[in-house]
Amino acid sequence: MNNGISDHCPALNKGTYQNFPKSASFKFLNMFTQASDFLNIVRDVWQADIPGYAMYRVGAKLKMLKEPLKMFNNRDFSYIDLKEKHMRLALDNVQTRLRSNPQDVSIEKEEKELYATYLKTLYAAVSFLRQKSKESWLRDG
Image (cartoon, rainbow, N blue to C red; front, side):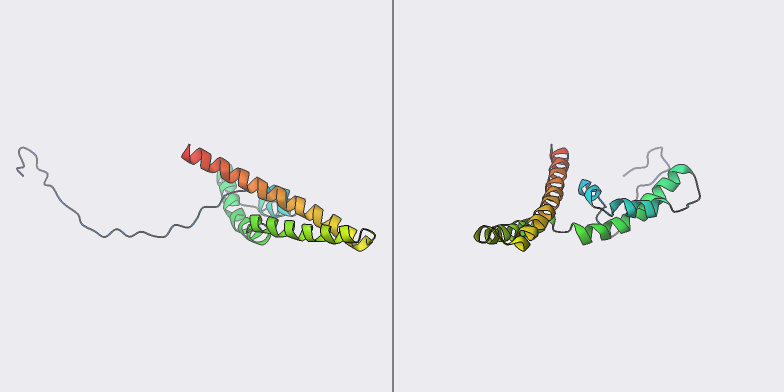
């Protein structure tokens, strides 16, 4: 290749591309807001005193909030769809026992408690699936 009137010369750099593993980004799930201790977790982190400009403080607090919410998610909401299915089977079992023995107050109490817990779990599972569906629709079109 001729230089012509340019004083630049072409160069070819060869190097190895190293693909560093990227950690999965944190996603806020709407179902978090339904848990009883969600506000306590956020309040504890948000009350931390962080020096700096306002937007820096917000970013730092959000970064601090990431780990407690991950642990919260793993503790209360991991495999929520499977939990919902297992709770449904348990509720069916208790309701079958209640039909065979309708006078048993302890089974009736167990059914009411299990039903209330099942509804919370169902709401969380539906909320998760709805949000996941919206994300994929926005991403894929």
